Image (cartoon, rainbow, N blue to C red; front, top):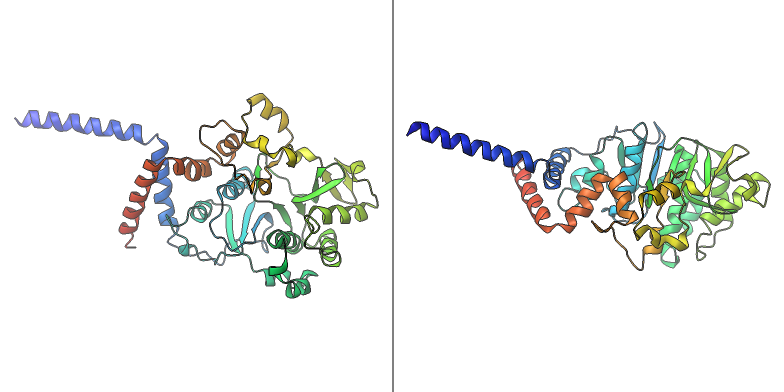
Length: 360
């Protein structure tokens, strides 16, 4: 009888181990693993001694709304930059972020816990008044009335990127640019079109005079109701004066007084009128051909504000490919899990167990 009992117990043990072995290879297990890791990671507040742009330049992202739950696309942009540039700090400034990570726990929040678990990502509050101190933007910011501005969030972001690059140096990227290659530190801008330069991706050393010139022009030629007046139009205006030329196409792929004008394909391989191509199906050879020279794909999320196209698991779209290839953690946790209610519910149960174990 005892031998039979031991035999049954042995068989049951083998069966359980086999199930666990298979389960640990699934996306659901990976999802749970991330939940548990983040629970323990979030026990500590943000360390005020963490690296910041004053000690080490890096890649900068900015959120000028008061939202503290980044979109999956924004999280993907930050994750992809962090993965491809492990030697660089990735700074994500958020206007609504308090700096205290314990205020943004799972499952109430998803983006902040995910990003804060990445070793080279630093989340920082965006204090606009302090940022604009000792810059030409200070007086403008004190006088402007946001309630009367048509494109306030965008205009404010235009000003913040200039001040951040002036004060700290590094590389600025929009939160709808998915990185595809490591980025070199350099003084650069990138043409969105022939003879038209964008401000969605820029790199400059600390206290570069071009950034100061841009901030002065921002104030002198401020027209808030014209789209791009303080953004791409500004960079194009100032760059033409910097290069002493009205034809920037002559400098594409070259340097102009110490500033490189990168070719359009570096960040804008698909022009904005064709933005919906990102949500179409692509063949591998097409992707390799179009994006062969691309550091980061600007997916024109502003153009998507009306149709609100989403990344759908299994759709085979170019966007799904970019998420899977360059921000797999975001894809698994914020795209796949949200389309799999059973996996999400089980994840929430694990979250509750983790909190109980920690005495929450």
